Image 1 (cartoon, rainbow, N blue to C red):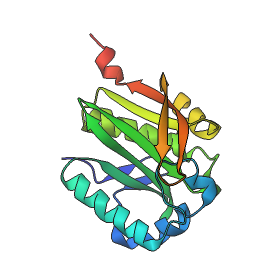
Image 2: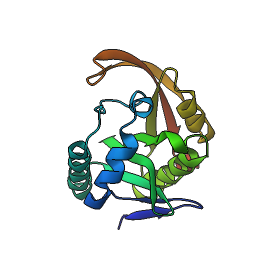
Image 3: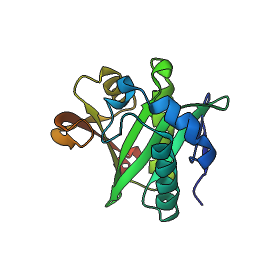
Image 4: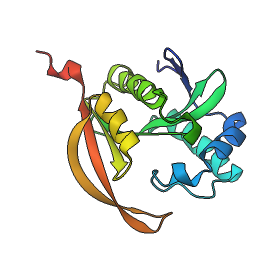
Length: 178
């Protein structure tokens, strides 16, 4: 059975619940956060948060994706998830509220999600992308052992423009063992 809650040294990473909607909407409704995310509406309203939580719960029940919220001492810091499953691989995405940047929280959460993906879900590889200019996300992925895979273009339907992203890949270390 899959874990519903992932604990790290400082964090609790758990499935979003409807009572998280207000905190989610307030935390992500920041242009300096949203500009680094793909297809995230701005302004981000309570309705957006409620719809995201409902969608996340439905997809988790079908094992289509796993979205979690990141907490420290019952305070939401951001979100993280595994989506786009195909052939024992998936896409990792994450974000933190701006006031939580540069504290190692993203690295800690990404490390926990890699363990979840490789151990609990038995994945062989996990991809993650960051937009050109997002040096914080680049550092997180590099610290967590991701390697450059390719540069790609993506149309952001919220910003209404083409964005350049760097796609990184992390291979399950257990797969390298004889």
